[in-house]
Image (cartoon, rainbow, N blue to C red; front, side, top):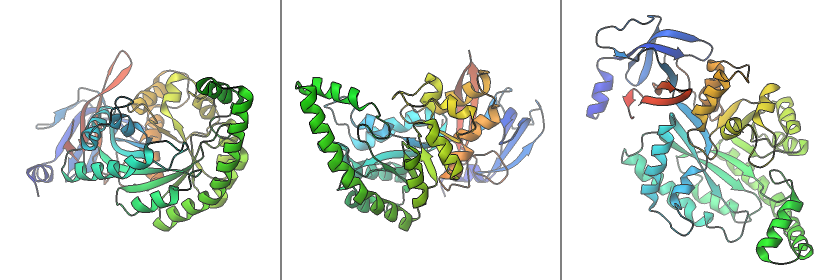
Length: 391
């Protein structure tokens, strides 16, 4: 037991005069933490007991749970031709994660490649190794798990997945199919035009090449996808289906036993996911921008029909925190702050099978974030993970 463990296990930590964001309501009062867990929630208003920490009437929210971020890769390659040390990259990534109020993150690492010359296969194991080493050394402030993003159109994906599947950090997996004209990239004509320009060849020649590639890789996908699903199920991992666009995409996933539709690209797909009892995940940047960066359905459209359950940061680490407060404060949505915070804490934790966090309630982990507001912008003032201050 370390000195910090002794501190957290002795006298309780009391966070007083806080606007506590519970799962279904707000309370003005105190949260008592002991032994890394929430011991009590008290309706004490603005009173500050002796020895308590006065939060000055600010918000206290549960630590956010990010079920999908591919931001770690960006720190491996801070410039296109510069590869950074893996552990140092993990630490830089962690600083941005905790800075967004995220105390549990699923680093989404690509398994297999949509393009044959991609570097992603060679960096997969070193990235996981770096997370292991940094975790073992107590270097990370957020708790990091791994989300395997499995590209079904790469015949190497099952072997790559098998090599890392038994690592304890691996907790969820998704099936992806990044082909032009299918799922996320629907505008195949635009894709072909851009590629023809890059390759400096005719549109007709490029179209022939692209359609041949799509046919070949689609056949690979039909063989690889069942293998990936079976491997994830055998390991007991929650499964996500990535970029569902057509009703058939959702039905395929649901028939496979996949419970989560991640980043549905159309209203029709989100509606079908709801009919099939699937949980839906959307990108928080989409909420903040008001639209998809790929020209697909806006998350505000899904929210208007009650079709969005979870927000993930996707490619901007602090976007979940911003999006939750925008949803609650902008007047453009019907959700209040407790409902918005559920989308970035309780709901993703439960979807990932982490029933010990994501909510301020007695007995849960004391993963807590003290939030200040300035000109409508939320910012973390203090952050605790299992009752220990990490920021």
